Length: 230
Image (cartoon, rainbow, N blue to C red; front, side, top):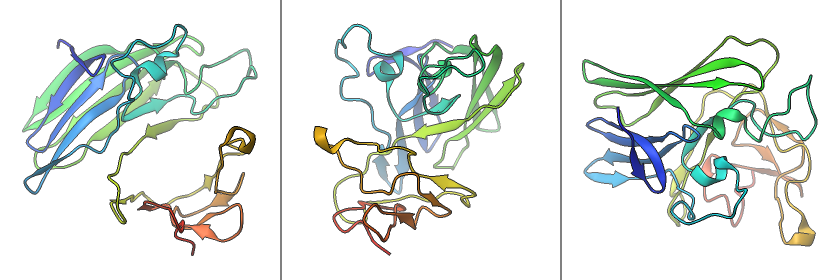
């Protein structure tokens, strides 16, 4: 299956009666995506505004392709070496080129299958992206094989909502454990502020602790100006 260039990145195209999605070869990122909902089209996944611009030399591949949603292994970043391993931010798979393994079609269902061979901790990641007829959803699965040891995984989903009260609503499965960033995320001296409490734990995105007391409902967008304190 050939790739086509979409907003600066070679990508695979996946289509159903309800969804048109692209998956980048670099980083395996899903985006842009268009959903057909009740006679209108919605594209909730953002693409970095510099996607088709020449970026400065040394810009991480992750930032060059940045869009939509991508798989992280490990999620996050630590400048320290762990058991002889030093991973780039969000892992090799977010920076390297994925390999096409096949496109399966069955009863209207389409599954794009890609793979990525890791080197820092040798193993294989198999990515499956599926569209189903009549479904306004994208289904993903990642299979990790050939490696051992603790690892943090994550899906790095980014959403773009239009302005206006109540323009977005986020629903997730039951939260077993949630935590805000363990250190100050922004530096006020540089003009950056975070309204959430540092290293706060929570069990619902509807009640996330605020730095100045109270809790914010992060299931609704926008969360400002009142932060939906509850």
